[in-house]
Image 1 (spheres, one colour):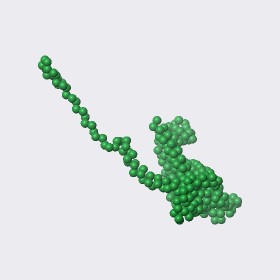
Image 2: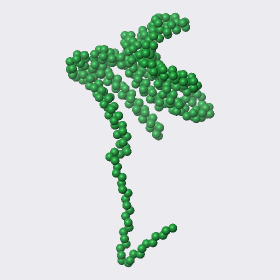
Image 3: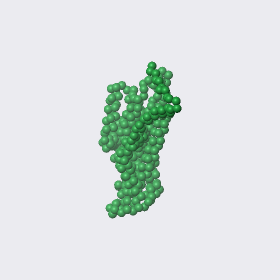
Image 4: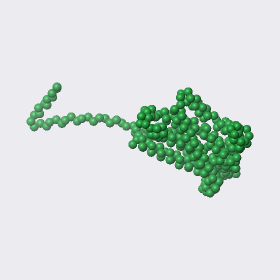
Length: 328
């Protein structure tokens, strides 16, 4: 052990001052702190979103405040009428009839899609490898077929004279379906359109839910089985908490997709018969493009956009609550 000796200080002399400890040299910080860097990284994407989506949205609201029919469009006139387009639209009984029909159609379609997709996802989890692969390939093929091609096939299936469905029901003993028209009323037409959309929507949702099911540890199912839980109790105690966030996401996406669906509805009966299958996107097209009332159509589109923004805000609120619950 090394010992240190202090040098003797003569009487009356001032002892030397202790050596000052050197301060560490502070590192020079950059211009942007660590909390600012993530925002700078997403800044180009935000700018691109504002340019590609923000500017068209502003143009949409600007057009909705103008009287823009075919004559004003040809002459290049700027006729500002304020909120008259919104007032006319909101006081039109046809608009509210179409809106209620669209909301009911969307809700029924989303519920049917989620139930069918959840059933298929649970089925894929319990099937053998060979049968599961066959089912997955079938789902991918159903999802990959173009919309117009699938619509044409469904029109042939439900055809009044030559449809295979009516012929099959006739062979099974249902004579009342000979020459039955599935497109005679708006309700039956929307039912056929709903089956068509369901056929193409289920594969994506089913694969998404199946991916969430694969993330559930097998040990949790084994523990539930050892505790004597029934299959229904196991589903609510183990499966449901694990797939609930994914189910919320696909529900939100399904609402957005089904609310603004256009191709299938227009390709089947163009909103007929007698407007019985007209939804808001079809109503918007008939007002804007077919009727050449672009200002009124812009007002309808702005109202639809507000509904979608409200749904998006609700989804973000649910997402934040889920994250806070996971953190706590």
